[in-house]
Length: 313
DNA sequence: AAGACGAAAGTGGTTGA
DNA sequence: TCAACAACTTTCGTCTT
Image (cartoon, rainbow, N blue to C red; front, side, top):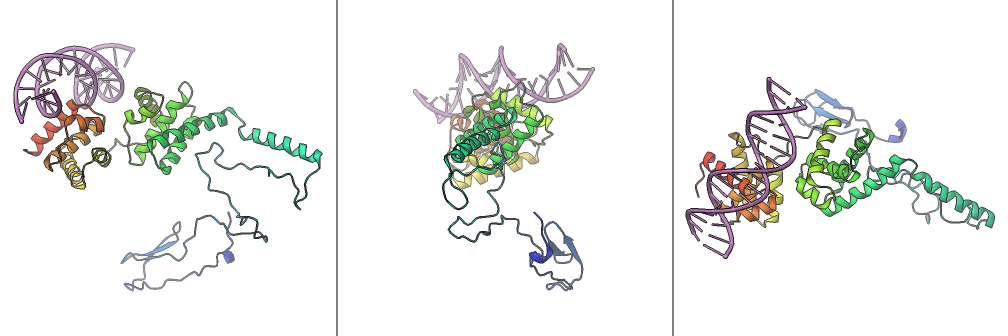
């Protein structure tokens, strides 16, 4: 999309002096279209460009559905990114009169051929299948749209790098989702993903590692805190327990109690401990089910924490 | 009887020679 | 490539409430 200056119809304000602190030093951020006062940090956004869709009508006829200039935003969730066109389905010409039977047949054939070109290569077919599977999985796991987009993006990259060769599409899809969840700070455990996918935890884990390595995706080890809210909600624990659990983890991190340990184990133990301290006691079994670690692990972490943090009950 | 505890053996992954 | 190893799991017997 190109802009012409006179179309922008925006007043370019020359800032001479900050209205707040009277400073004359400004820093200009071209991307955001902002001028920032170096002294007090006041932001002048005199050039902000609306990046939203340009949906104004270019049609004269108002009965035609608003004739917007753009379609929907592109998305990685459709194998063609939602960029294909369709041949109109009405068998009528621009003036509305119907076509001759010969043209009728012609357009029916054209439409069919046109449809076929949408899925033109084996890569496209692969994507179509995989993204369908991705949607299904994400829906069952109740994941928001931005995570799905992220996962779709990762999957596309994986296809580019030929990482699907020798692996199942389902496995790569599941691994992409797993990675996307972690990147968006709403981590799911491998078991949780595996539960809804036809592939097992083992394969998802293996595939995930391969993808992360090949695509150079930096996924930091997930933070135990990211799990707490979800575990607590499964266990129907109130707000104060959540806060308490976060607090415990903060303290544990400070004295290097978390290094090298599985994040889910840490999270589970702190939730168990917090529930006990606040008088909403859950059994080790209940917590272990919610967190997907064994009672033994909870016990070990929990004992370490009690000792190191000097908590007595 | 249910839950907590701990020992022992097994699993899958990482690391360093 | 292989062995050592650390974390975690599984299993099971014992103790506590």
